[in-house]
Image 1 (tube, protein in one colour):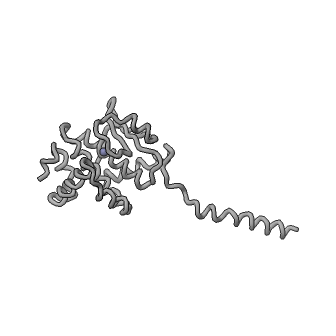
Image 2: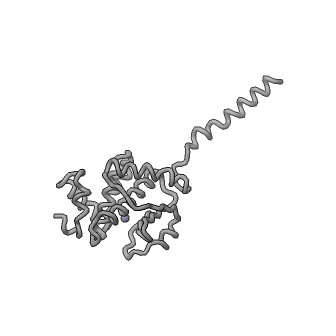
Length: 195
Ligand SMILES: [Zn+2]
């Protein structure tokens, strides 16, 4: 009787193993706590690997697509999955729920780059320069964390603002080198200034 009970217990426990092994921890960012856990990593990587430091406080929000549309006040509508605005003396970053961890981190890196631009770049800088450089950071970030498929999709972007701006940044990188990008980009007003 006791052996039978033990056997039953073993079978019972074994029946749970597949669900434990195959339902790996979720990689989809839907919860603000998951977001909060990733923010320090992305900020630290931007500082250490790219020299991007943000001095003004940043508040991040995880939102659904329709909420992101409501917050968005710009005139240009790309395929936004994130948004940055500087308001009331602080940076506000909105990121769409439901992204993979890699996509989330890269989007946050992109939006934090906009925060850096507010703090450090010439204010009259045009949208193509700003989005192009944020895409360039996003691309470099994805490459750094080994998300090569996502990095490649940045390269294939043909959008007239994001894609064109990004390609100009690759040209600039070829000329000045990755390490000098921040110093150069800070003072560029128009994308046409990149010859
Ligand atoms: Zn952007």
